Length: 169
Image (cartoon, rainbow, N blue to C red; front, side):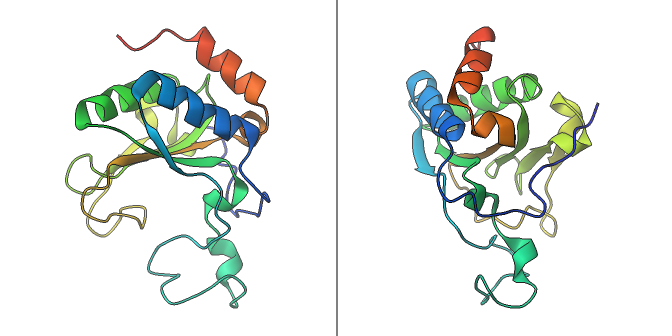
């Protein structure tokens, strides 16, 4: 069953949330990933925000989820690892309370999962040249992950959910 997406409109969470930091640590331990960004109070990067800044009229609805501290950009070491991560996260979207994942290097213009489209594979969208989450830049080697507000605020909850799941095959 689809879940409501929590981050529209987005908001300033004032820093990286503990559960999101835990997610970054767990990914690094399992897949040798690198945390390349959690908290950044900024606008999304898309056509609507080009040349704009926070505080400009009408821009409040374009605040990045990174401003909440619940989004992680997680650089993976290679495409094999990226595929394993993607498959595992998609399989466990409900248990980990994943709200969104972008894999920018998948296919021609990237793929995205959003909880409001349904759990697991039902929530995946293949991006196109004109509809690509606003961040397609060639072949970025990272996954963008967003977790629910309750999961992002509670590192113990995130850790317990992670540990309850089978490791990737």
